[in-house]
Amino acid sequence: MRVYADTSFLVRLVTEEPGTAVAVADYRRLGRPAMFFLPLHSLEVTNAIRQRAFHLRRSTPGGKRTAIKRETGTALDLLAKFISRRVFIESSVDMDKAIEVARSLSEKHTERLGCRGFDVLHVALALELECEAFLTSDRIQGALARAEGLDVTVSADD
Image (cartoon, rainbow, N blue to C red; front, side):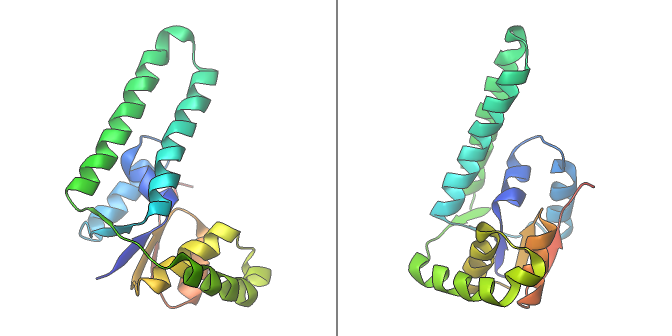
């Protein structure tokens, strides 16, 4: 099965944040499929890990900041491990073509669903990669993927 996970889902697999347990349980329930990992994912996931550290440092007393650095390192190491073990399969796609598909999806669905630009882009990428399954932590993005015929798992903790 060809599986695409959006950034929100991938971040939950490598960090300890609200919703991590639900995402991990959903991933295991699906049989731990390999997932496409695009350069866009690489940028977004690593940036999300670093941004999380930034926000945690701002709200954490100085004596506890070493734990934040350790958590960030652990998340980045886990990401590298998933890539090396081909849990996340590094791939590429024609971004110009994907953006054209995203524009079409936007025209077709955004006024009804309220999709953001990256919502339609991630679904367009999944369609361009001919995926059957789409994993996300975003209900709106899940509705968009479902409307395009993908088998959707939405891992939300609320």
